[in-house]
Amino acid sequence: MGSEFGPASPTRTCTVCRNELPLNAHYFHRDNSALNHYGFQWTCKRCKILARRQFVKDNPGLKRAEDRRRQQRLRMAALLHYSDGSPKCSCCGESQIEFLAIDHINGGAPEQGGSSTKLFRWLKAHGYPPGFRVLCHNCNSSLGFYGYCPHQQETLEGAS
Image (cartoon, rainbow, N blue to C red; front, side, top):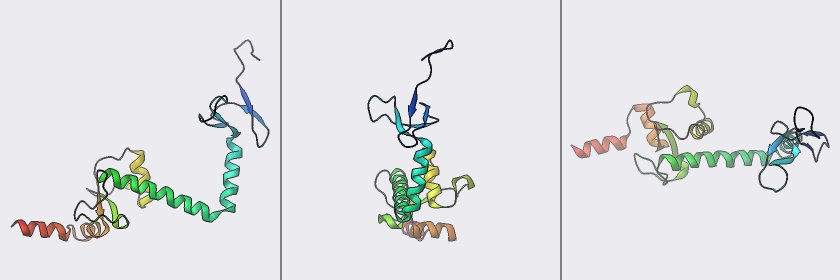
């Protein structure tokens, strides 16, 4: 039903709390997967949040596993990007995924975070900017502690 100011905005009754709410992104999450529901889910955001909190409280092990999988996906995406699709150390060629890390070529910046998860999120959010590379933990640690990697020294000595 409209008014003199234009048509009334559509509403939706949440399937959980049964409250009738305005049908917009403030009250409902977007969902374009099903037909004939105006692109929004049937459960309101508040009920979704409450259900998620209860799920996490009831299933802490599943939540940890979910977080671990998400972190592994972020890490693998960064490794694939910075090694042109074949994850390996750019110094020694190590390809064992568990041994690889992302290296800040010119040192780290505070806004990029200290933990690896925070770094992987930052990289993704910023479109995987230049200035990073894949190194194994040995090469990365050696560069951090000594300022060089023994593999680079071997290459320099072999060229002499």
